[in-house]
Image 1 (tube, helix red, strand yellow):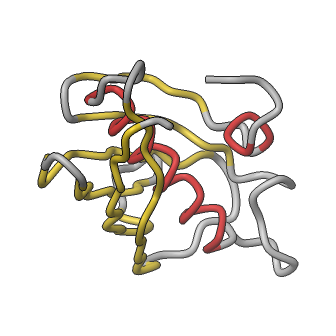
Image 2 (cartoon, helix red, strand yellow):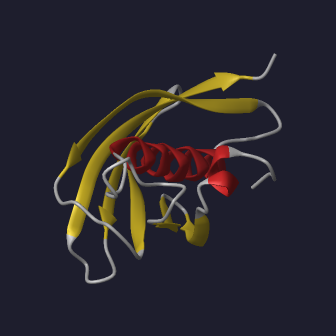
Length: 126
């Protein structure tokens, strides 16, 4: 991943990448909480799109193609105030022009924090 990106600023670290699966962590700290001290829903969505986009990039021909988030939704299941969250993204659909990724964000005790589905557009590079 490149330096000075949203992923770096949020403290996202990649633990695993495979064909159709990505796992990454993100701290729950001053960078990712909302004013009341809980994990910001937007930070969870940023984590979800980051792992889905990275997973998609691993499955395309980066010499000739580029990928972008097209649509994302998220259900915030449980609040979190400290520690870290772990996102696991798995590809559900891998087409020529789109991919659909399922992302589950859990805490250190495997409790579900957020579920997200992210659609990624795949386009030819110009």
